[in-house]
Amino acid sequence: MTGDWRMDRIGTALRGDNPTVLRRLTSGFAVIGDVQFLPGYSVLLVDEPDVQRLSDLPRAKRLSFLSDMDQLGEAVERACRRLDPAFRRVNLEILGNTDPFLHAHVWPRFEWEPADVVGKPVLPSVPEGRWFRGLSAAGRVEGLGDVRRDVVLVLRRGSGCVAFPTRDGTRASSRSGGVGGSR
Image 1 (cartoon, rainbow, N blue to C red):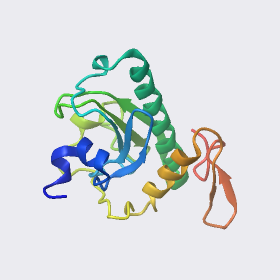
Image 2 (cartoon, rainbow, N blue to C red):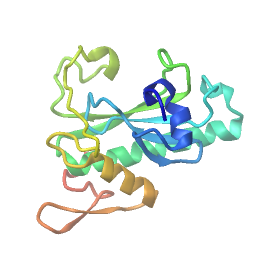
Image 3 (spheres, rainbow, N blue to C red):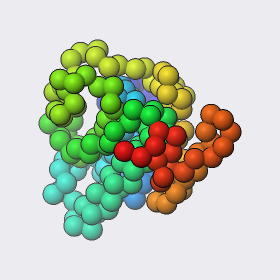
Image 4 (cartoon, helix red, strand yellow):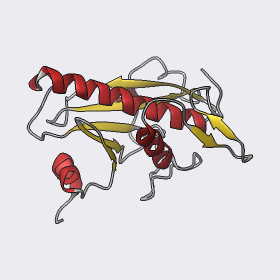
């Protein structure tokens, strides 16, 4: 591949050249955010580059996209709940104000977020560089372990209970709140 995969996120995902792809889903691609404003931030990309809005899809594919968004949201929730006891919830958004293709944002939210932004949407609340945690090529987020691996594990197993190994070697169920407990 020549060029920057960021210039054609969907095309590179379709060709297998997008390094952020976590898993192919029914209507698109689950990808880890290439910037991590909040650890575990992920995006669902539609698999048709010319589709700009949810209403451009036939009803069956539209419902499939929403189902995939739910599946990715649940995977991010389970992974983040396990990795950070301060995990609160997941916010799901379909915006489309900047990128000209249909995509959905999956934002994990945490207790450690500044009080002045907790009740607001993520993007307008994040000043340049604030909360940034780097994402390594392997998908590791500083201080939180392998978010990428855990989200992929949940996506592979689909809905239902996923048991993760804990730091002490026992196994914790993500359905029952995992390491971080239920919230």
